[in-house]
Image 1 (cartoon, one colour):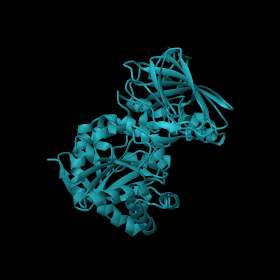
Image 2: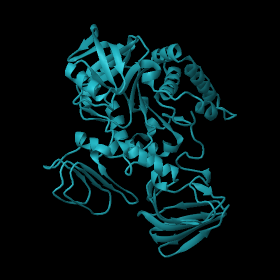
Image 3: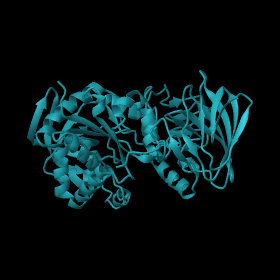
Image 4: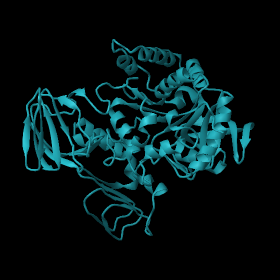
Length: 484
């Protein structure tokens, strides 16, 4: 029987740095199809559904990613439509988890939280669900539970957990729970080798279970300032925050992980060594852990033409990518950016993203093709004062009724049938026909047909950012966002 008080909390505010150029700030790793037909966040939701109904799954993210997450989780749109918890900005995992705990406490004082990142790979969901059952038992008894992963190598990029074998807390089947003897944060290689040899240290999976009340008690005890601030923020959120104080208060929160802020200080920490295959897929070099390799040890995706390469990651998003005689290399090609580096340097991709942000290069932010609830748009060309897009609208869908202050738009239909609202006018356009939308003019584009609508849109103006938009009516709830 499923635990009636069990809730899932998915942390989905990733920055999109580790898998650039395939991931971007507005399209982080959790949205990628790294293994299988579903994206990582879709797999994470489905993994939880073996332990709870979909309406008990909550996602903590930020407003910038909210639309993309809703689009990713369209299969569960009815169950999850009120289950997004939006942070004004990311402040690490302790504030995100604390905010979710306050939210669940209000719904259910006995709530037990399964907290997990949106972007991990777990190949054996049944074993995961078995571990959740054992974790729920310990969490109900007041423990703060984490899952420990059996190390397969002396990894220096993970934290380690040592169980106290003298304090056996529970057993169920092949799983046992213990008090935590110590946490070790990202050890040196020498220490990591020693931990692996000992057989009594586990990787910290970043997956946790606890009662919402218990984690808040420990947060109050070990980080009282953060607890008080989150309590105030939650109260303002519930009251409607008419003066807009939440974003300012949230920005002032200490950026601290739940490991440092609570787990490493708590006497209630427990660990369950688990047996499922797990990877946080931390960089391009880790793909061979979860992906299919050819006979030469290469992970290949897309239209790759290779001669004699070994142990490499080769990714072609659209174009043909030809490689010859590479060894231990990463080659990733997308429509607007290409990455080439040794696998040993793949962790430094985040430094490239930092440099792109400093240059204000758009390639760190999003792809040329951006998917929306109504279809997609692709930026074909952009320069000072103008931007050209190809817009595709799914049959029966329409964009929001909107206006722009600083740009005009000109639409040319290249395929399908368009219904255009422009000011007080409404009319239809077909292939080869066009119309213009002046600044400050309410307008809307819709596809009343049964085939995709494609138009070319040319924007002109001093500012062409996507935030120059005022929505009056929207089929996808974007006129008013849910706030944290």
